[in-house]
Image (tube, rainbow, N blue to C red; front, side, top):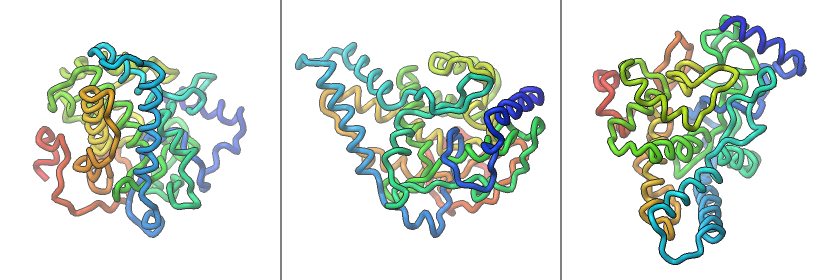
Length: 325
């Protein structure tokens, strides 16, 4: 890891060491974590759910018109339609990630790039947060010896924080919308009809140590279908969480679960369904890391305040750590 980190540092400096700015607010490229803690700035955010719903429904209508002209769809037609919805809304966008030795890593989804481009910070539709101002800002950045890859370089840390939005009154990072449409489809495509299996798969991606190792291989192939190897290697346990950032996000898993429910609804009503966040209203509060606190690994330093809430997310019953708190 140390050698790879040094190579990354040299490559970044080759591109221009000005990219290693630390105390500036730069638009995140990784979106691996967020900080949705309520404060004076987040209080100004307006609800953008209607704007996002309009974008999703425009895409659904276009795909229905452009692809399927017949009046009655078969199950194969519906599966094809959902695959196209995934490609149009949730697939990775080339050029949206960070290049390491000429290879791009940590690409963003189409919906995340749309949110970045179409939500106006001046109108309080989105809030950009710098690493130093986030709850993770007290972690040391150590070249080659950082606790997790996110903290190998200052630019990596800076780019790790997803901007925050207000969806139906719930604050969340835009990474949760990416999880909703991307990993939610992975759940549906893998036919994970058991809630326990979906919860386990979510925690496999997040890297929760409570998931027994003998279950890891069960979920590796699902991710491998959608995530090709990168310069950092093949997908590994905790790639979306503890391995990369030291954060196991239960809110990410809740967003995955809500997305799975969306694709279920869409398959059942492929020709008519209109997307509304209110259909997933019971999931939305738990897609906030303030309401649904993270678990931290690798001695990550977090300056955090969390909600005192009796709400429980979809996977609570399978998580002994939180049940015993």
